[in-house]
Structures are given as C-alpha cells and as structure tokens.
Length: 119
Image 1 (cartoon, rainbow, N blue to C red):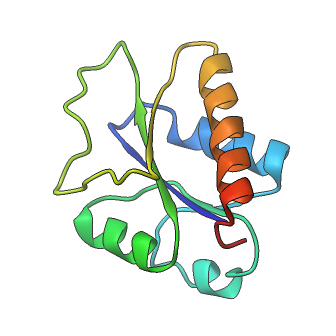
Image 2 (cartoon, rainbow, N blue to C red; image 1 turned 135 degrees about the vertical axis):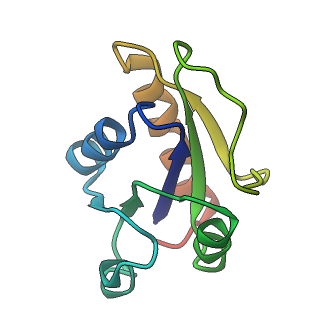
C-alpha cells in the first residue's frame, strides 16, 4: 500500500508517518521520486511530502492514496499546487493529541485493504 501525505508545513507529516511506521509497518520516505518507493513496491510505504500535482499524479499512477493533513490551528486552503483529491483520497484533521487523526488513518488503511488497494 502506498500513501502520500500533503498539507501545510507543521500539519504533522512526520508524526503521522511515524505512527504509520509503528502501527502499520509502513516505511517512510520523503519524496515520491525516492528510489525506495520503487524498491519497496510490494510493501507499505508512506511518502511524507507530496508537493504538487506532478507528485500526486505519480502517486496515483502507482495506485497510491493521498491524505491531506489539516491543522485547525493553521489556515487551510485545501491541497495546494494543483493537487486534487479523488474519491478514494482523504482529508484528515490533525489535533494536538492526534488521536482522531490516527483513528481516521486506521480506518483509511482498513478500507483500502478491504477494497483491494495494491499492497
């Protein structure tokens, strides 16, 4: 399974990637163009920085799911740089305790695995 994170700086990219690594055995990497994404194509990978629509298109072509992180303490204008969320993508609000965000991420992963997203 491939998940790409997008959102404003400070929205919790690294905390979410760390949670996915600990709770669901994801391997974090910084960019979708990192060689690690190709090397681990049959493993769970989370990309911490989907920067623009080009990165999002690469993620989509590889069967990935985009997760837009929102922090209610920061102004959020939705995905930036031409990124468009699809029906299978998700917007997750990240609060100080992260509990709700982790709960939503658990459901996203469960739903994707149930629907047969590439593992």
